[in-house]
Length: 320
Ligand code: HEM
Ligand SMILES: *[C@@H]1O[C@H](CO)[C@@H](O)[C@H](O)[C@H]1NC(C)=O
Ligand SMILES: *[C@@H]1O[C@H](CO)[C@@H](O)[C@H](O)[C@H]1NC(C)=O
Ligand SMILES: *[C@@H]1O[C@H](CO)[C@@H](O)[C@H](O)[C@H]1NC(C)=O
Image (cartoon, rainbow, N blue to C red; front, side, top):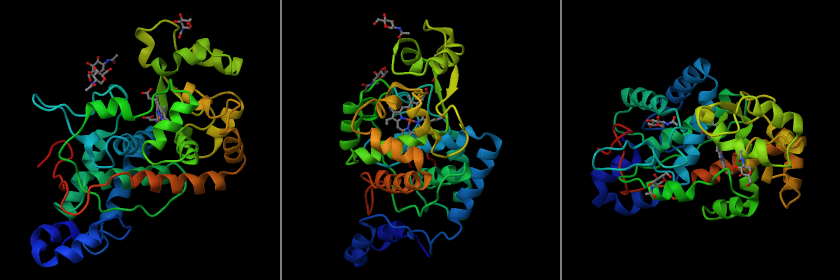
């Protein structure tokens, strides 16, 4: 059976009303009849990639975030630059930083084998993010799908819509509110920093110049990140000093110990309005997991393309 959005293209005059209403929003069963092998195929590819390199789970989770915050979860982050097209991959928050594009290519290729032309890159990013969290020991949830892929991307929007690690709490809150996400979503989603790595250039000012930081932690990180910018800029350190390849609540314990790696991380526990949420998540992984899952679903709802908008890309790196 054809997937609903292809049905739309084929029979849109006859079914315009019924199909338009059934594709107007995302659902968890969108591909159940038309591509029953989808979830197994994505999970197998994510598992391969994360078994090979645990950090890849973090990188795939972040790709979904950076897709959704730039004009919605529409696969725009996957488009390559060309001579005549500027995409998002070289925007300030992504350049020399986002990774995992080859893994998404491999997942897309596996999915094209079983359901050619049916599944969007935007949905593959969403499912891969969930499978990455699960592969690293975090909670699972039913992913809403039915997104289509954008024909465009915006480097300017990527520069301005993705929050920077230099932001204070009020700017972090505004950045999430601009996407329709709450303060609770901000704190819960920041728990994604329980996995993955950051580059020295993004935490240098914090470990050398800030006072709301544990002294031993600062010295430990200084050993791998020279004070002066240059050769060491891309040196990596784990965002969660305790268990960087386990999706757990130790990130919030780090914040309470003043061992947040990024300025933006420690802003969530710095004597302000979000301290109580951080404390609560640090004490209860089940509370954190529940709020994280709810927030991931809300983030995945940001401005999806549905119905006859956008397309199902054949290759995630270019429009058809
Ligand atoms: C709250 C605002 C946020 C800021 C300011 C922020 C900033 C950053 C920065 C600067 C890095 C390191 C990049 C580098 O040095 O190359 C990073 C890594 C990461 N971020 Fe965030 N982030 C935020 C929210 C999120 C959210 C909402 C998610 C996902 C739900 C997320 C997932 C990740 C992951 C998993 C990594 C590690 C990626 C890897 O190891 O490849 N972040 N983030
Ligand atoms: C950043 O990436 C570009 C290519 O995308 C590369 O030419 C450049 O050397 C990288 N810069 C650093 C500082 O790693
Ligand atoms: C985005 O930021 C990068 C790096 O700061 C800059 O080179 C580029 O011109 C910016 N692009 C737009 C469209 O503002
Ligand atoms: C620390 O702050 C001083 C004074 O603002 C500044 O000159 C210096 O560049 C900062 N150092 C780092 C590593 O950010």
